[in-house]
Amino acid sequence: MSAASTVLLLGVVVALVVTSPGWPRVRETFLDPHKAVEAFPAVLEGLWLNIRVMLVCGVLIAVVGLTLAVMRTVRGPVAFPLRLFATAYVDLFRGLPLLLVLFVLGFGAPALRLSGLPSSALFWGSCALVLSYSAYVAEVFRAGIESVHPSQRAAARSLGLSYGQTMRHVVLPQAVRRVVPALMNDLVSLQKDSGLIAVLGVIDAIRAAQIETALDFNFTPYVVAGALFVCLTIPMARFTDHVARKQGFHGAGGHL
Image (cartoon, rainbow, N blue to C red; front, top):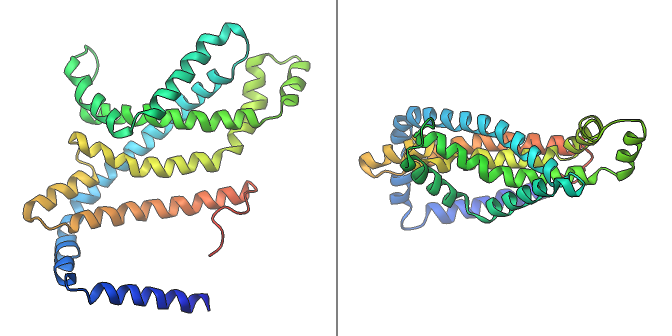
């Protein structure tokens, strides 16, 4: 019954779209098969850049985010400057829109002509992604660290482990395992947001689609880019649901 109602609803939606007065023009402008085939190699090459940015930035974000989370959870008055810095960092970059960070770093940092630093838009765009996403990932890690019961720390310290050893061997392994699904959701978001570096002129999938569109003002390349992003995102999302269910989140990615 559910399958029949779904098919019926989809049929009604499709019928409304294809019988609308503007459908022929929309089909010609956004769904031109010839233009899709023509633009596919350039968009695919740009997507490979998005994938590389996602992988490199993902590793850096995990390292920076975990460092910030540890800094925010370290105990004692001596560590107050670390907690203050980490808190200010997280508040700042969670408050700033990613697009604004991209503009400031992508256009502002190269203008400083700092010795020893690249002027590449790709470099600074990647830095913007790392800075922004690290703030969110730090909070995910912090939630995982604080979810570990204090008795775990007390037991580890009673066995003679130092604070650093307790964090490394007792707290962090449990914390990271608990937040893996949330981290993978952030990775899915990063995969999509890597396309924002196109605003700096980097030729990724979106920028390649824009270039192809500018040749004849046919927007089919954007549809191609969107389809390629979806082909990456959906498997990652389903894998995230699978990991979440294995972690005990039985409601994750509920059955349709």
